Structures are given as C-alpha cells and as structure tokens.
Length: 143
Figure 1 (cartoon, one colour):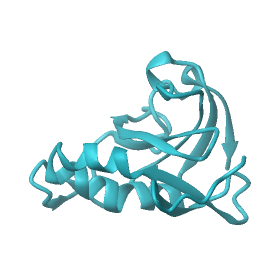
Figure 2: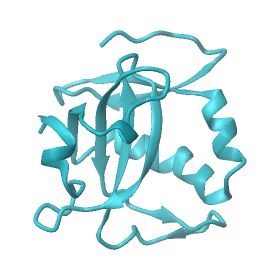
Figure 3: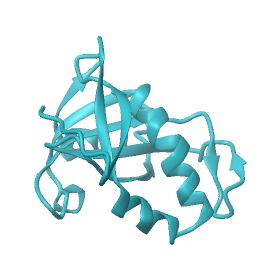
C-alpha cells in the first residue's frame, strides 16, 4: 500500500506490515488527534499507547471491510489490526486491566491512515479476534 510523508498533517507510527516480516508507516491525522483530545483523558491515552501497541504487535490483521460503519468517511477502509493490549484506560486516563472479553481494533484506509479505533466484543472461541470477524472482513491476512 502506498504511504506518504506529511509531517505537517499526520503523526507517523511504525506498524507491523501485513506480511509480518517488516514494519511500515501508519499515519494518524492531527485533526483526528485533536478530536480525540476533546473526548476524554482515556481516549487520549488509548490513542497514545494502545493504538501504537496494536499496530506494532497485532493478534491478527484483516482486510476487506464488509460493514458500512467500519468504512472511512473520506474513502474506502482497507484493513483492521486487532489485539488485546497490555493495559486499558478508564475515562479519566487511569490505567487498568484490559477490558474483559473485548479486543481493540484499529482501522486503516488504503493510504495507511488509521481513521478509527475502539474496543469490541471478542470472539468466544478466539478471544484475540473480534466477534463476527468472519462476516465482518473478507479475509485474514496475518498471521
């Protein structure tokens, strides 16, 4: 996937590439980070700590989003990194144990921009995958 370097508008985060044997750059817009900063301290901590952790060490990477609500409002969503982070944050930004029976998902568009992320119910058989992953994504690309 093509990436771009625009340090004036995007924060760059190193992520595991979908083939699993190298890293690549993923971007988050400063506009999105500004929106997150107005939500809660917990949302800021998720963006600062959990998003990079899941991008660097995902449990799985899926591509081909099948749900409209997963799509990027500015273009097509391309893939989703998911996993269970080492920590979660409450609304006040205090660290706590990861949420029970939930997985953290980070969505990327075709330009490798992370446009959305959140906690979601995990699969009851594969607890590090999101519930409904078979219907939600076209295919798993890693591992």
